[in-house]
Length: 559
Image (tube, rainbow, N blue to C red; front, side):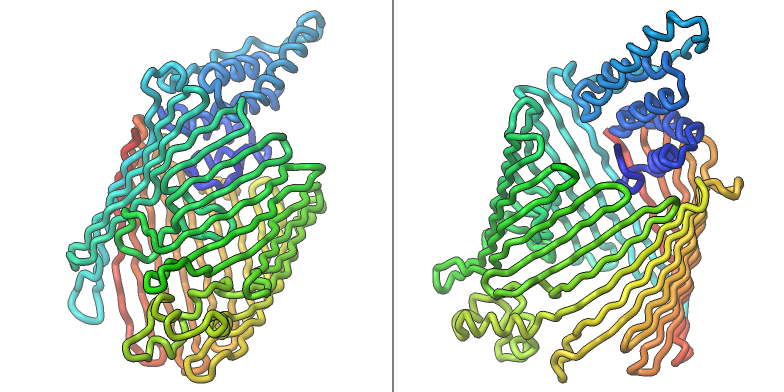
């Protein structure tokens, strides 16, 4: 079952949350809206799956049976297929029993809508293509203190495609990229190939393969990479994964070419829900190419555990990452959650190095940028320093932090929720003159949200955040109010107020940003949207005020 924060449309999120809160009629209305307005969308699969469950929960067994049958017809290879068959079998037995009972008076099931436009992929000879093209134009105009001046004018294109064809298993190809042109500075042109990889998997097989530019491996490699990933799952509770390739430089403007200067590989053993236990044990290595020495320089070698124990009402999770070269821990985290009645309590303790230990961190040392000429690569640094010296330099530019996090989430009613969080951080910062200095900070936050609790709104959220630290204090209040009109039309009003005080320089500033969002979805899935903000930045100490109008217009065309 999808979680309500999975990055999908507002309508699907609304339906999932209403289903979770027991508001079945509102949930049903949201999912029917998706079926009416998003023909061809991948979200139709989840919408019909939830509609079948709603009918079953409402005791409408005939309707639920028809919904499950149509789901199997439209989505025979869905991840929900096994569960659907189980529920359908149970419903069939129940209906067979109640049909012989005089007390069984369930009304005839209404006609359930089939989805002919969402044909199963197996019926397509050439496979199925899905995705979308989004055009975005950002225009910001500074209206004061001088004459109105454009400060941003950028047009961007985002392409996201997925092609799937079932053969001996499923073959999928993913493509995602963007191109952006700055009209105020033509040299500031950005383009990025985020994803271009093929994936093969077969539910009847224990082997999955992915080849090309793909998302991060998940074992502290936080960037995408060009390479191959292989997964073997011989048992339902056990799997083995391995990845090898070239990490993509996040800050490189041209991200289309393969960058051969770095190499990584990792392997990990995964455990899936074995008596409520799960997680993975991994080993990873990263290398840097040193052309002058014609060698590959090992920059990171680490082992780690990322595990959890989920057994309501108590959940426990932990993370441990240990660098074998530096012989130090990068991360140690222990987190607990406990639910009692309508309250969820959480506590977490973490020790972390920032950034994770890596020989590249040595290049952050101020003395290297002040050298003549400046030293900006491991290739040059390796010619002047030993490996041990580089390691010590990296340690000098890595800081430690210890954090305690406490939280309480309360579901006051089915529509009202409150979230209260506190964290305390003791850490270090690197000063160019004094080196490492100690820093402390606290974070207090209060968050309230409601779903149609006021009747005249679809959703309303309020966040209060107070962050006092060693050298600054920040107070932030934000609120968002959203409403739906008819099919496919949504409007949101928002406001953000922020005050920052810098203790070391005795300066204060305030920021106020009211704004709104309008969006409309057509029956063919095409959507248009407009975002606008009016930003007022005031330097209280100097008495200066800057006002800016920020706009963003988007058009998304699905395939």
